Image 1 (cartoon, rainbow, N blue to C red):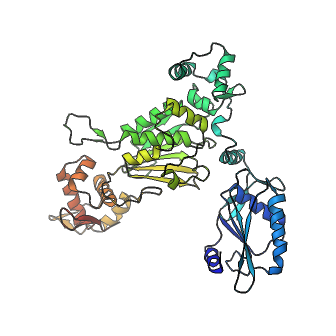
Image 2: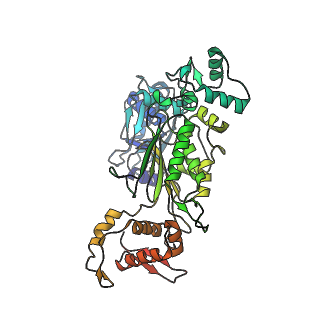
Image 3: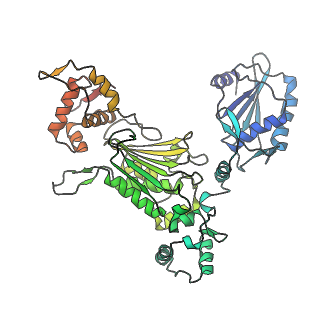
Length: 489
């Protein structure tokens, strides 16, 4: 790295991956910083840089002292020792800046000399002060898995009929007749430990899992508009029981709250779901298999008029990113649960391919790894996408148009008239849906809008005429090759 590259980095300021220090005189203090980076995602410490982004540098005669201090801090004041790399950058005034590169640790958690575990929090660091955080740190290094942790459930909490049927169908073996034989089998299958069901055993074969773990449920709500409404909803239900029961209930809830599309079939046909069923099968399986079970929170499903959100507790584990999962990469957070899902507990079509399969069947999906909220969110757009230039993968969807926000703007055009009559100063739900469809696909046709919203072409044309008259949208270009433009956002 040269001076110009250093200036560019320093100008961006401190964050969770880099820290500036004018000088270092205390090995214990430096060890705490190294520990925090090692327990997080790694990072860089620049010695000779002020946190105000000035670069005074250090004298060359200080180099030997600092190199020795860095070595002592990383090897003697951190447990386990950390291997760091240093680079000296020469400044125009002849002074130096030391660049210390700290990798993400592979033997987490790391302690400082005083036995304190540090984590990076933005540009600062903090102590781990809860068992939940410590477990999650062990989980990130594959030393502890939440689904293998024993619960307080004994054999009396096992649904023996369901377990018997599974053994018969999957392995063609009989349920042991004695408690000792049953416990031994459960332990061999990694479903129990020390005489108790572990979390995987409880959630997969437990009779009433929520008696022991009440937070592990699914909460689902369907709203009439595009925002969460504390007073109005169309449908609401909580799903409890085993993973299979929660999955089946959640999938049924979603499918019954979606529209049916005629799709050129006869009027007596039942129609097909507006979004293929397999899309929600894959995303729900992903949520149950890979959620963070060290977080005591439910999976949440929100159905809006323009989208479906499935929110799973926990960030993507380790170095996994949205970009990586879109390339088929995966990281197993709950190995026992995943192994039983692959044995037919839930629909399973291959590890690391579920997200890709969902996108293949419905391109309008966005995924968001929300670190601050500690959730992974899947947003399935309900508006049919044809040739819309969307950036849906790996980030939030384009913000939908808000009916209430537009209402205020439409009220300002009350003086306009249509066929001699004043225009009503509000948007209907259909008009908001039409605007969202245009936003997602400016080339959408009358017929496509009619199919999408289960209306006839005349109704769509009438509502678009009103939006054009109000100056909210306009049509540009020819009938075949033109497109819509939204004038009032």
